[in-house]
Length: 366
Image 1: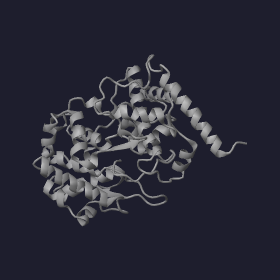
Image 2: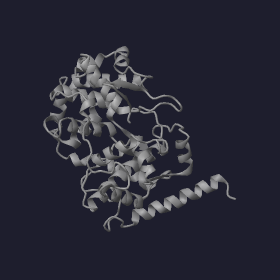
Image 3: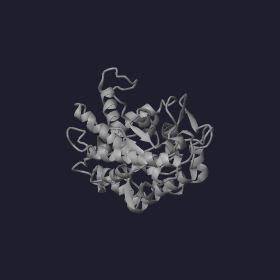
Image 4: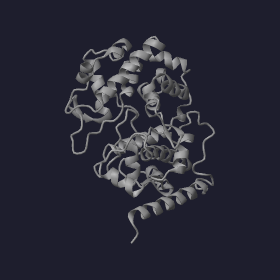
């Protein structure tokens, strides 16, 4: 009987060979499945591809990608919730008045849009809003909408730049405490400060500077607002995710219905938004596979260090799994964007009682 260390090494070698074979196989209409698109201005796909190629802990099962895409396009498909009609925006939980105030509010929302999970065996932070108990991102959005309804000016850059710990704690009041409150406080103050210093207090001026272009606005967010600069080194290679910067553009698009301050060129350049819910769902469907030692750590709800090889590989594989799903949907005559793939998976992840745990990393980026 082989020792566990030898078994693990053999699994790594076998998986490495398997990934190399996949990269050389013409699997999607006789093309390399990991072929880069002509336009990759964000460099998210190109930088994460290198992680997927080199990864030793996480792999993509392309056959399962095809199966999942096939299930999704079937009327009344095999998996409940497989309808192609998805809500694009939850108006009941988001503030919207159609003005520049909404634009600033969404920037503040996404500056604090990360890490809502509780410690093992602990209750999650939640709030009561209009008769509903909410947790996670929807609780954050509803708490910020509730604050506006209580005349707290979350669109005002000067207010955001000096908001106190006590004020923010009051905004997020509910059952339990929201995780990483200090980091959220830092981020929202940064939003206010940068808006005042660079954009005359209004994020619409940043949108104008970016010429209403998706790629330019994502890169502007990452450059001018350091808390949005979601990049990491993987074996001395710079990897870009830009999760919250990308989702901020998507949220503006959703809030304004793709019009006014939500109208952006090159919107299809967005990738998936690599977080902790999407890989949980992709693993549930067999699209993502984990090395046994990593799977054990995740299933036991052990923390993964931010920036560790395991964590970076999970996020990179998530990006590419969604990209391959997008391509397969197109191949089967059901064109969708990566953002729509992301939303579909996120919604499925909201009913995750039968799924294995998501990976746990304390980070401000997702």
